[in-house]
Length: 108
Ligand SMILES: [Zn+2]
Ligand SMILES: [Zn+2]
Ligand SMILES: [Zn+2]
Image 1 (cartoon, rainbow, N blue to C red):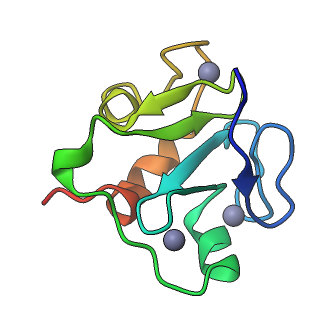
Image 2 (image 1 turned 90 degrees about the vertical axis):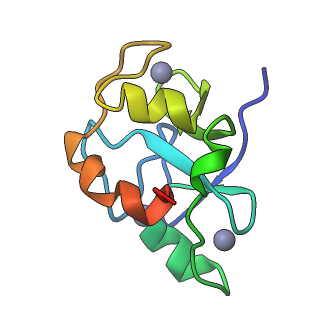
């Protein structure tokens, strides 16, 4: 399986970036505006020439979340249902990410 490229500032092998670099920050998100994986929204803001468009609620079956530990692509629904741990490899995700979910995944 070929893992998708992840864009961002200083992205490492586990998709951590200059903004979120703790051991738990291993999630990359495919942005609905440009269908490209970024390490985080701040990386998108720095590198893309447009603003982030959150995923609409009806697209939660899209594979748009990449676990940087096992490189599995999760659907948005899978990620939101188990967002403190990767359902594929069990890697812990940063619980603080929940505070940013609305930037990526719309409730509408
Ligand atoms: Zn974009
Ligand atoms: Zn970043
Ligand atoms: Zn994983």
